[in-house]
Length: 157
Image (tube, rainbow, N blue to C red):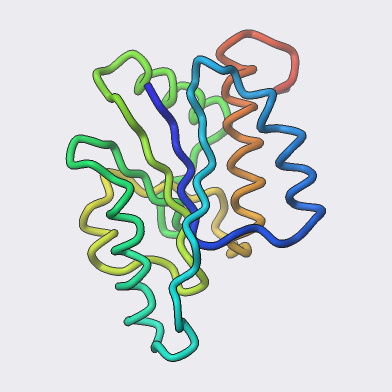
């Protein structure tokens, strides 16, 4: 199974990049985890929020196959404890899912096309965070899920 975190735009905050570099190499290689940063939409400043979300949807869809599992990270999604999230990952690993894509939208969120395509919505919090910070939080949760499933002493209940 392959796990992708697909994000619009690059992370330009050096501190966030540094922290992500701390966690990324700790994710087990057999998880086939990849952080994919899709370039920002060109001429985004000339588009209204709905147009921008539609253009971002096209960029997301270029990286997703029909058989892929698509999970959007959205404040309106279901919340999990870290242990519940690790169990969900374990379930997907034991199923026939070949690729899971977790999507982080741009500043305005997702278009209706992406909401319709999504298999699930997951919220990391009821609060809103920058799309750059969500990357870090999610990568840490993937690492945490791995340690939980491996029985390593990183997570404390």
